[in-house]
Image (cartoon, rainbow over all chains, first blue to last red):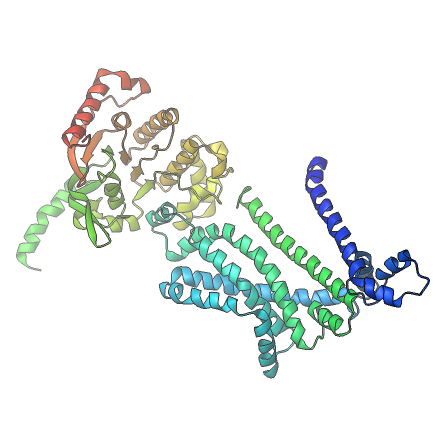
Length: 290
Length: 277
């Protein structure tokens, strides 16, 4: 990237960030003002009160720098395997989301292959898949956790299943579209070679579907993360970013909640970046286009 | 087996021993398409015999069934009546034997494969070894003048070059029959002239049988040893025209009286078939 390009991409991002930070500070002051006033000494100046809005232990809305400090201390001042470390919790969530994403990938592709190749599945399955996505994950997650807990499955497995359940849909729809994308000429060509059904799948349908898979993967990977976090809420808040959110809200630890939210955002960015990296690798193999 | 039948069989085997079967033999071939309960006759009672080594063009206006006939020969379309034999076997069996290479109206290259890997596609499907595949691809890319482009990708080539890649792909498994469906229809005239010259040279040097669908009279006359003139509603053959022009053909041939008189005959045949109505 040239410096001019960096400028072109960087400036808008920085401007948006600055606006967000300013608005955030304004709301932090506004929302915490009542409590700051109530706690203030009689001789406190206005400035004292305003600075007090940004220094509370359990503010209604923490100021950006408070979240930054909390993030820093919870990431860097504890050993990564300590339950006090945000890295530990992010790792727990990432693992569940990762396994869930792998499940979604396998399930999503399998369903798509079935739908494309079997008319009966095409007619019956899609409705069930769409219906499955209308059930709110918040409603279904506790049930899955409880049911699986009763048969002795706790920890990673129920979380991964919920993450997978939430994220297979965009993979299925993308793959169905992709597997159906080859035009009649491209299919006739293989017919003239007397190609087998499996060869048609591997050399044409599968290759053609890749361009449709990756947009779905990007959505799916963030959904897997959401699924893992939601699944951590009813597990008794043992570990994970969801557990941090829940514990934070139990004890009014808003700083902890916000730090966990930011950790989740960073995790999502990393996950999307990883998908994009895989896409770029494939683009490279294919000479510059997917 | 009865005595009568064996008597009948003798002359057939004798004929087969004397002359190899025609590259393509159509007897009363019809193709009907069903759509919304209605049947449309795309091809009606076609009788045609194409000998090995011929370059035969199928010409006619849209809807005359020329592409349908080519697709029937390739077993991409089902014959609803009559008999179609390719080298003496059914079209379906010929396709299974990979008896022909097919060049479509568009290059139909796979954009995720490099030029070389597009050419090796049929060889992969036929289970050829990797080294042999590469050697073949290089050889046939050389033949169509694209040797140095083997690592490029389809979208990096012009339309004419892409169509040449698709010709290399059709030739690389060395079929004895080449079926071409308006391969140069989408190209500009200059590119088309170049490819016509190239294709004519290729045909002369390989001695393969070519069946070529076109709607360009000059193209048909320039390339062919024989022209099949077809007419629509229903698609049928209205005339067969032998092209007795010199084997050595350059683009200036198209200005000669001999060339123009053949072109004129084709036009007359098209008119007789009501193609201009």
